Length: 406
Image 1 (tube, rainbow, N blue to C red):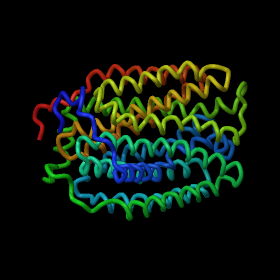
Image 2 (tube, rainbow, N blue to C red):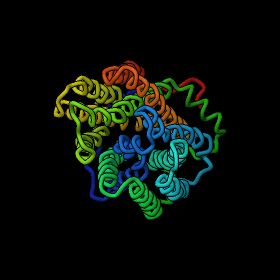
Image 3 (cartoon, helix red, strand yellow):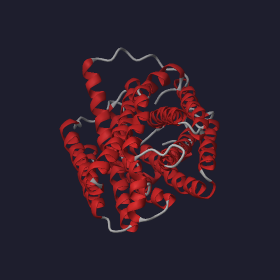
């Protein structure tokens, strides 16, 4: 574990080799195929709302019900991570994920659709959490920030490419074909994991002692830095979900009035994040986690007023800033949790992701209610409050060991 000073500055990492670059690419591709289903469905929210004949908020909650499954799965993996083989667990999670994804093509009503999205979330989160644990256990401190940034960059790419695929496929081939295609991507992720994840043991010095899962959870929750990171994660996805769920309805309504085919290209707003998110590792190493977190959250806050403008260029610029800022903050927080955990990094990652995705679920419901009752401006105000709270919490990010740590 790094010393308390490591939160402020670490030694710069050496130049990256070709082999290391390939490994980072594989990490990012694994992330892409793990969570490509998570937010792609947001791009077709208006089409789904028409298909099921429901309101924007009802469809938004159903689509984002996957975050409920992800939060529950995060807790489950946190409890049992020490007993789960990383490689096998990730492989089976992605392989089984293809089943509920394909079944969404035939969901007869909103209840069934919601239940299948919860099932997707359970399996996506298991794969996500186990991969983070695998990286934390097999990367040096110097390499971990870049590895986690690469994983979150794959997440960013899934937001862009997944939404483009979903919107384009639905526009040309219909809803059913869309879900079959994503099921095939899930299966491809399982094959990639089987081919690339190493069976090598954890890094030397990494504790392999079996600790009571409840003792590990108590240790993590007794750590002020981890508690703070969990709350920041909650706020990050709360804000992200609120923005990129309900902006879809703003885009297709007057005065913007974009068609579904055009909306697909709007999601190139995530492209800059593919460039900025990998920088998080270097920024953390040079300036510390708190400075990096403040930078990311600040960029997202600057983008919010632009979302309220009536011109498409301003709205797109706002979406770019919110995406860049929240993904940068997420990469920073994910790496911080792994470094701050004193035992069982799988449990720490599981708790973080449980809080993170719970924030997405609460954000979807609460901000959806604000959107339906008071409009987009009220929704954006709620997003701003979450980001501001995260900035205040960031002041408490330190890696001082907690009292009574195992």
